[in-house]
Structure formats: C-alpha cells, structure tokens
Amino acid sequence: MTQSGARSPSYPLLLLTVTLGGILAPLNSTMLAVALPELRHDFSVGHASIGWLISSYLIAMAVAQPLGGRIGDQLGRARVFRVGLVAFLVLSLAAAASPTFPVLVVLRTGQALVGAAVIPNGMAMLRESLPPDRLGRSIGLNGAVMSFAAAVGPLIGTALLAAGSWRLLFLMNAPLVIASLACLFALRYPEPQAPRRLELDWRGALTFGVALAALTLVLNSLRGDGGLIVLAIGVAGLLGFGALFYRTQRSSALPVVEWNLFRSRSYAGATGYVMLSNLVMYTTLVSIPFFIEEVQHKGSGTSGTLLGAMSILVAVIAPVSGRLSDSLGRKMPTLAGSVIIVVAAVMLLAGLSRDVSYGYLAASLVVLGFGMGLSFGPASTAAIEAVPASMAGVAAGTNSMMRYIGSIVGVGILGAILGGEGSAPAVGLFRAIFAMLAGMSVAGVLAALLIHHRLPEESEAGLPAGGAIAPAGGT
Image (tube, rainbow, N blue to C red; front, side, top):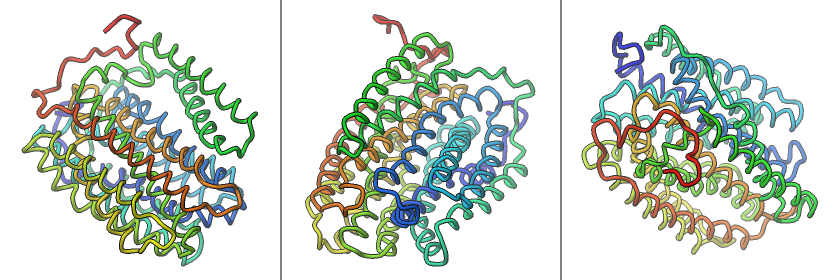
C-alpha cells in the first residue's frame, strides 16, 4: 500500500534509496568520533566544549525527528525526504569550510535538523509499502547497511585524517547524498495529490529543545567546570522549560511527540529499549577514542579498528535477526540481544585498566556489536508496526527521538564524568562510565520484556489520531 494507491514502488530501488539516505547519520557519527581529539586540539577547546559539538547535534536530532516524521505524514514522505537530502548536502559543504568552532557547531546542528526529515520518512516509506512478512527483513537489511557504514566510518575517518584534515570528513557526504537523490528520482515514489495543510507544534518543539539543552548543561556542570552559577542556571532552565513543555503538550492537538503511541505496551517497550541500548552503544563509541588516545596514548588507528570491529558485527548479524523476527516474532531476538549487551558492558567494566590489551577491548566490543545487531532491528520493527500505517512517520520519528535522547544522556554523563578541561582523564573515570552503562543495559532487558511476542495484523489497537496527553485521571 502506498500514499496514492497508484502503484507499488520497485522494492530494490526503494530499499536502496532509503538506505543511502539512512547511512548519513551513522557514517557521520563514527567518522567524527575518531576526529574528536583532533578537533579539540585544532580549535583549542576542552572536553566540555567539544561535547557540545556532539550534544547540539543529538539535541537537534531528538527534537526534529518526530517533527520530520509528522511533516512527512502531512506533505508526503518522498517530498520531505528529498528536501532533507538537499539541505543536508548544502550544510555539509559549509561545515567543511568552518572557520571557527562555534560556526562548526551551528552547521552541525543544522545538519541534524534537516537530517531528521530523512530517517523517519525513509522508515515510513518502508512501513507503508511492504507487507508485514517482509518488513522485518527489510528493516534488518537496512540496519545492516547502516551498521556497515558505522563500521567503516572510523576507518574512513582515520584515513581522511591521515590524508589531510577533519574537513574531508564532511565532504564525504556529497557523493552519498547525490546517489540517494538520483535513486529517489528514478523511484518515482507515489506522493499525495493534495498534501494536507502543515500543522506543527513549533512552541512545543522550541521548549523541548531548550529543556534538552538545559539537561546537557546540568550534566556538563556536575563536574564543576562552570561553577555553581552555571549549574543553577541549568537546573532552573530544565525545570522551567520542562514544565512549559509539559503544559504545551497537554493542550496541543498535534504535539511534538504523539504521546498516545506509548499506550501500546509493545511500542513503549520497544522504544524504551531502543533508547537504552543506543545510550550504551553511543557512549561506548565516544568513550573509546578518548580512552585509547588520552589514557593509553595510542593513535586514532587503534580507535578506528576497535570501533570498526564493534560495528561490523552489527552489520553481519542485523539481516539474520531481521529474518528471525519475521518468522519467530520481534521479542525473542530483542531480548536475547539485550542480555548479550549486558555481558559486553560487564566485560568492559571488569577488564578496563591502563594496560588492558587490544584483544580484550576488541572482544568486548565484538560482543556488544553482536548484541546490538541481534536486537536493534527487531526492536525498531516492533515499534513501527505497533501503530497504523497512517501514523508511520510520527511513530518512526518518535522512536528515533528516544534513540537520540539516549545518546544525549550518555554523552552528557560522559562529559560530567571525564576530567578537567586540560587534563587527561584517569582510568577510574572510565570505569565509572562503564558501571553506568552496565546499569542501563540491565534496564534495557526489562524494557525488552514488554515487547509483544506477536502483533495483530495491522496494529495493536486503533490509536486515536489526536496526540495530546490525556488529562490527569484519564487513560
């Protein structure tokens, strides 16, 4: 089924189009991860400041994901997908020429805002075009390619750093965006003849973004970098804008987040698991380069191959887990993968030391990659198929938003735990980070238990279209 009902798009071309657009986010994340130490020294900024390059991107992605999905629901998936790709290309070229660190942060944030239109609408195109018995394997294959992009990202980033500068990393986006646009043009995805009037909760989006920024400021200030005044400002902003966001969501007919989605136990469990597992994976992804280069004093090549080992396992396992989830249900592979992630987090916590071997770290990260590859695709599929196809965009956007919130919290805690601006962090601080990740991975197991073994044909229930939070005492 498609938006217009005119014809079904070519399956291989649809998958290629969505995948080419989808790999932009993981590729940019892992390439940039290995470049963070160089960026920090190139612009002469500290750990907290370089953390804002990551946090601003994640905050913008978290806020804009559900908005991007809702815009696609109203104006057409392919149309919004195309505009997002073009804008991402323009901002990538501008980021490669950034003269200062603040300019780079602004352009990177812009990349997130427009990139948020690509991911949920690509997922929604798959959801509304494929039957349930092909959806899991398709999302699994899409996830495998995205994971492969994440796997080669550190290697590409390392090669580009050796060849010249971190600026080359942003130029890598150009051929991918152009290829995705060409495939989208050839696909001729059916679009609505009469798009709906665009209705968005801009006030809610703004207050949500400020609240997330305040949360990040609080986490970064916990180590005392900004003093008590900055910490107090962050707490006041978090409480004030958090309360304002809650009020706007109660009264809005089309809130930023379709809160009624969480009435579905399977959607709530799957989305919660996606958030927690991504917190573990992304925090590990960002922590390892700093540990390797600032504690063990090894080069970016070591970091790149370690992160590559983790991501390659995700890419290898994801298609298999997608097929398993189509035949056995979404819950079993998600739950099994969540337990394996706990094992990986405990391995990192137990074995971390200044002289821990490359082999031990690689083995731990391979286990983590195996768990992510086994569980992430089935969990994402469980979330997006738990709602009617007409809400696929906002459902995918909200699911992606929670994934980025997990990353925001993880990176914020990372910034709060690491040492002062100019000093190299101690091993004990990294142990504290992985102790936190072990706890989060256990919480992920509990979330995975909420996913239904099998869903009804269309969705769990006819979820109401209105998304406002139910009044106190409501259901």
